[in-house]
Image (cartoon, rainbow, N blue to C red; front, side, top):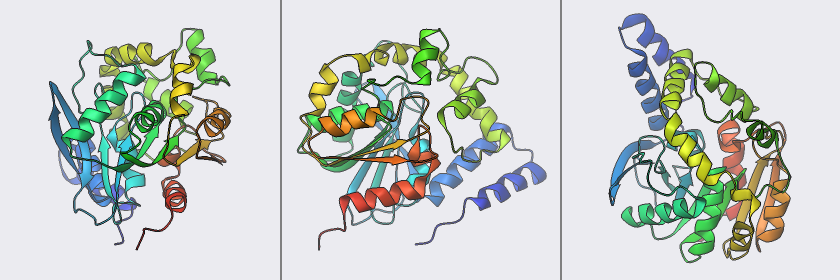
Length: 312
């Protein structure tokens, strides 16, 4: 099925601005709903213990396999929408908001180490009755995906790690900045969100100004929980536990990295490829820290090539 071009989003936004008295929040929600619908997705939520977990799922179920998508630090489920638009015709997609992120509960007093978050993914997928899936993760979500695959080999058909955290053999610009007391991943004041986008993405998708303003407001509002989460994961790349864990992964693993990544050095992909028994590394030229957002069509093609045609 051919999906509407994102250019129609601009038409809707222009009409909203010119012919209505919509607030920025209204325009933001209209734009987000349009992108989700264009990708064949809809929003839903599920209770997992004391947590409310928001997620995106197919508007219409497919006969194909299931794909679970896990975002990175400070991000949310909508980071996957443009990639999902190339997949929902043939797969059932679940893009989840981890605790502390997006529209999910944001308690400050639960664990946010990578191991804790992999446990939350297990509970979330149990609540969604997802017994087996291809699992994708970006950055922090990539490390969580790797741990989930290591701990649940019977539930993971394949794993795709987009610029995963967890190993920092080769340092990056971010490491130097954080050591100096400056973390561009946590917006604190106006202008910081644009700086974050410039730092993390080499090939930035177009985001109209009303949407950017709301994204910045939400990011600044989440500063406290983001600082708690970052403190919990900050040193994850310096220990041996994660490296030992990923050697247990049984599923085939595709590691995709943008060569211009300033958040995590792309050369760490070599360590992932060497440590995981059945791994394939793909480095994308001209791409930063979020290949699935910067090059969604190419990322979808890599995934399809990686898993091969469906069994007949």
